[in-house]
Image (cartoon, rainbow, N blue to C red):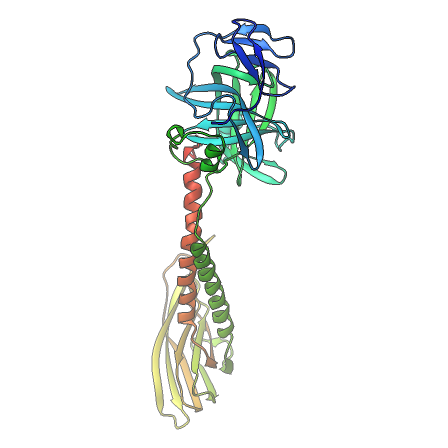
Length: 423
């Protein structure tokens, strides 16, 4: 365990030897022996005396030194906080830190997680989140700071139950603070109100093992985390990231390929839009016998269905194929179902053909519908089947989505400790 070099003095209440660790901006020093609060700016005059304080559990002691992001800090003060709500009780510990180069900050020990907080002079928009807004909002309140969005995580009212060491302000056991915590990407924003003032703190979650090791905390005193901290990073192996990118990239390429191939084909025959009672006859010639030929039948079904019969003849008027197809199409104010088109694909040898199509049956089976009265037929050769490509793109996309779902699941775990309810 490492201890910072300090200037020593005697408590003006009990005479105990104390160390001054926190630099020239320290305002008060609370003696750990007698609980006297001393004015560090006025010869350590006694300001108050705190009695019967219960020491909280924490792995950090005053005087410990360590580094956070290569910046040296010293633990100079300890405050234990308690919050009561709906018959439940929460406790956590804040440790005031001091760095000769970076000033003051805080280490917070809560549910076995250790986070670091520093004051922010920048003001978010909006500047605060009221209890009324929290209670009446349909969605989690949000604020923005420096272009980053922070979403509501939790709020409450807390009081100190233990104070010891040096602080750059004057804490008392009578203090009451209201806080609102908002979660962002890699940081949290705490809006803290007390004593008629509002302050903003940016909270980060350092690497826990590196932090505890740096401050010389013996492994036997390392806190045991409970639950998930809202800043816990999503950890994925490079192999997982490679697989995600591979699946999503392959899905996108397959989708584009299917889209391109679906444009292949040349229309070789088309009828005019005619009455279904006349039927349609389309002569055409096939030159690409190694490709598929697509026959499309269109009808103006409107909340109704229709059934068509088609006969395909060769140039000798011999039947090549006979098939039946139906269309049905239904719509509402904000929905539609079915299609006014039906397609058939077949492989035909090169040659001249004639296609005859007629409607055999139609019916209106939805309120406000109209019976099919018009039809049109077209024939396209050189069509490429993209069915398996579409399904391959979907399956590859689903495989990649599994990794994206991992992020969604991780986010839901991070927010599991929030006091927000969607009800």
